[in-house]
Amino acid sequence: MADYLAFGAPDTGAAPGVTPNGNDLSQFKPEMEKLSLTVTDLFARGKIGVVFGFPSYLREIQNAVKRASQESSLNKKNLKTATLPVADSEKAANVAKFQYFALSKYAPDQKAGLDFIIHLVGKESQESYLEEFPYVLPAMNELAEKRKEQTMSKDYPRVKYENFMLAQGAKAIPFDKGLSTEFDAYFKAVNEAQKDPKQILTDLSAIIKCQRRHLIEGANFEEACPTY
Image (cartoon, rainbow, N blue to C red; front, side, top):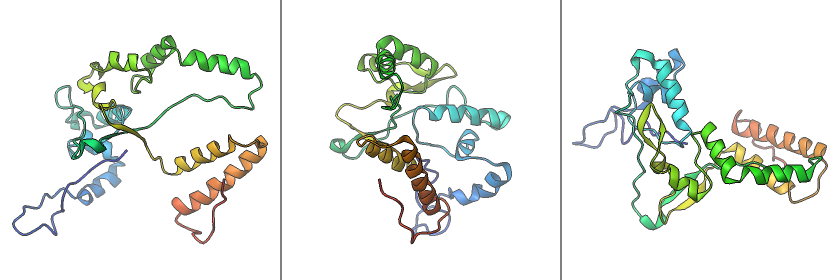
């Protein structure tokens, strides 16, 4: 998910004859640090006009509204979802973040686990799941069509599912979750080869530690991380 905080140049560096937009994120930094505010908090307070995200982002917005209390500028009328415009319809795409259930091949009762997975993918189970987790999109086309015109929250009737669903002719592109994507690739690789569970944990721990040093701590770049 990306939050677009400013479009164009800040106060300095604007082209001749162009009015500076004055929407540089740095002006919010002192307030954010002092009050431990997130980008979503700024959005709830009306400091940012647009944010981009998945349906589940609504939960963060609702929490930010509660934190803002009287400072909140969001209400039933002015919080609305919309699809992003595209310049080239042939390259239109939806960025998807998939959630799924999996069965370990080391599970003690494979049949019971498989029966449970089959139960979960049924229509009745999916309807129950969506009732408990209204901020996810259904996998079945039948259920997707049913929810398309519905609103995601009774508090915000202009926040609709249809704005998040796959547009006709568009491609679904998996969301790159950064470091988590590395781990997903690792598990995909080990799933194709027989490995001892303890060895899987040992190998993955080594990968996590190395990637953490590189991507989070910004250190030990000369160290090559273990491969799958």
